Image 1: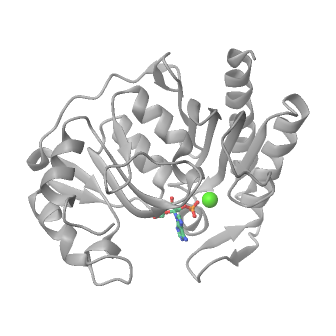
Image 2: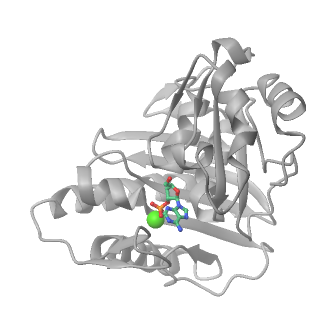
Length: 265
Ligand code: 2AM
Ligand code: CA
């Protein structure tokens, strides 16, 4: 397979999809809820996913597609070439703010991430990487990540996890929040992971994400030396929901060893 063609098609289609989303801002959104009242989907999420599926199937009929909104294939294994797509990551932001959301797209070959794209539609900023060939923000190469200490770090995480919640013991993350220089919460996993890639934040923690939330950004942050695992420090399997912990090199080991080791994540 000609991976350069796949890369250029992926970039072209993401830009086209972004343009369609920008044009949709004047329309009235059709908003529905999914697993809970705060888990949202709109007609634009669905139309964007269908746009990608049509394009991919036309040019690469043998490729499999795992899309958040379920219009792709039933994907039970990562054998062959698989596209993992989140048409809008940060749908709540898309609805409430018309910003702080992204299209996320990863192309994997036998479970290995080859191409990662995260498109910040409103800022027209495309983060992209091809494994082994560097990572870029639009045309500009992103420099490799440097190590950082906890006391000089900004950690991205949701406030939910440091107040009583049904998923984890909220006391566990308080020492990390206390010792870090600051915390941030952007409400879009794909952008929060590329913010680690660009050094705008130093680490990002989430309790439960799906493969399409991180498949694209994982390729980008790993290309720059960032480490992405679940909160137990294990590799992600890119097929099931899991917790997620991504950080600069060094910082990842330190936080795992000193702050996360006692948690039942
Ligand atoms: P989404 O916008 O594609 O649903 C919000 O903190 C981040 O978590 C977003 O990246 C959001 O992706 C993701 N997320 C994953 N599962 C979610 C859920 N059940 N409800 C809301 N956000 C979810
Ligand atoms: Ca989504």
